[in-house]
Image 1 (cartoon, rainbow over the protein chains, first blue to last red):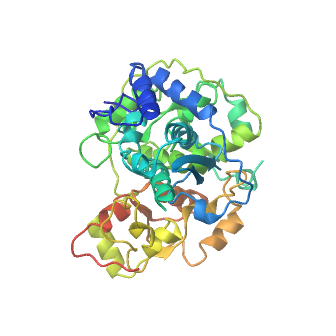
Image 2: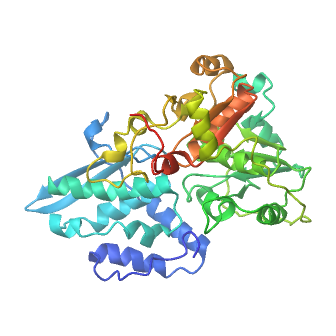
Image 3: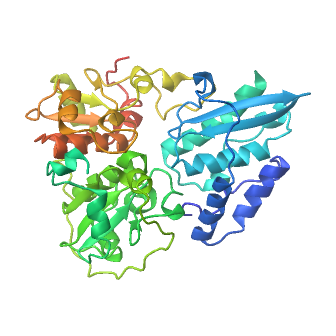
Length: 149
Length: 281
């Protein structure tokens, strides 16, 4: 299967509803370029954080080449996330930030902790570079860490 | 125009030069990116994409494509022996340098890098398109893989290390010290051990670039950056999988004139997992 060729062979019904919706939507594309354009549209919908610069390094997602920062807030045990993507060419990070911002919104820490790292392959395909995979996985890991703190 | 281009480094072209050659049939623009979405969000008109994973890597073995596969790639990309290939891309031409390095492994040296990459092109408000160009394939040529002058393998690196010859680790300082490999709660960096090859000095690849413009630093600044090294000495560069170090390889070989610099693309994902080799932290 090529890059952006579809989701991994794995049940996605266990994903939180909004994430499952995105994964299912992207899996419908059989044309690689159409799928890429759909992900670019998601990246273009990305809304950065309201937090003022300079950002505290404690919010920096480690190992992410796109210079991503993440913040979390909870209300009665339900979590909300915001991201900043400092690299203007970090489109994959923007797309994943938008997906996480919406897909994890209102979930509990236990629900967030159960989201598998394989989510990035469901969205972007299997053939991401090692650095890109780790950067995106670390965005999800950061959400888990922030919500479990 | 960037000073380094003005000075006539013949392996670089400026964005102005590229703009003037958009319709030049002797030139093929090749975009190669770290982020696979970037090309499709808008690229230089006429540019094709070479994807590191799909186009340059063997799907099974950890190695690059065969000479025959490379010949197929160039044929369908409309690149003949006389075509001048201009590489550019995101992240300060990091992956563009990698693609150029792989092309050179097969003897294709009629290539240059557009200084500043796609960041500079976009910042200058130049034309972009989402249209994928239709490329007329050219007759398949014979290319022979001869990697020895530019690629180094682990046994040679071990001998190089034991001989105390120059090694440059171009990863981030946290990777160099091994700190990042062991960050709790995050996936490891593809290696069982953190640290660096004994004797290697840390000069992160990105220090060769102006982050505001994406351009290479002026030659005088580059010479200062690598002042501890000599163009006459046999030098090895490495990172995690060999992509960032191909950027440094390009700087040393083509901007500073190093006569014998080789890229260890096995890099830390190989060295940090090898049984019985020494490491330093």
